[in-house]
Image (cartoon, rainbow, N blue to C red; front, side, top):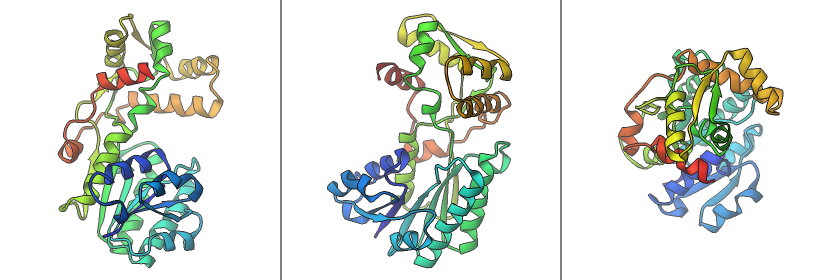
Length: 287
């Protein structure tokens, strides 16, 4: 058996390989990476490293040679139209290389989503279906690390957490939990032609996050809800570049409109209880 993981030097891909190494021998794992030099740590662990660039069809096809299972991790590019091209390359390469099974990291509840990001993932799922290859769609939630990270130390210092998320709730999941779910689906039977919405079964609000910050830090932190425009002004004033400001305020706005409120038990069935918000806040504040 050969499990090929694309984007293996990225944050999610690397975590998937670490979990796979606990489940299968290293010589059954192949890392497909754009920059082979960055994968030297994986080679030291006994993982085979192959060059694979999403923009280079032939390199992807070669990297998929002999793949019993392929974990296709979506491109990190910010240009969604370009991502569709990259993803089509990967899917065609998997088909032409004779991959036996494609697992793809999409976006949770993509067909109902209102954010542009979801269109790329739905297009990719349909592309994979055209190949006739057995699939597993691992539809990931937004990463918790986007919201719970060492930057929360500033909120503790100021005594307030400012967002335009309102009373919206987040079904976010950590990269590590999503990586474990992927590794589990790749190494267990029973996941062929299944679609999983890998979200937190207990979504939390920013009021809740402020409460946990208070409990963990011992300093009073409150959530101060603001409008979309006020949020952009606030982020500009703290020195963030315009593209980041637009993206951050846009994500919070989507949260406020219910984008991340849906729940599912799929993640829990694969990995058990996901990492708690309390533990994540402790880790973030200690970093």
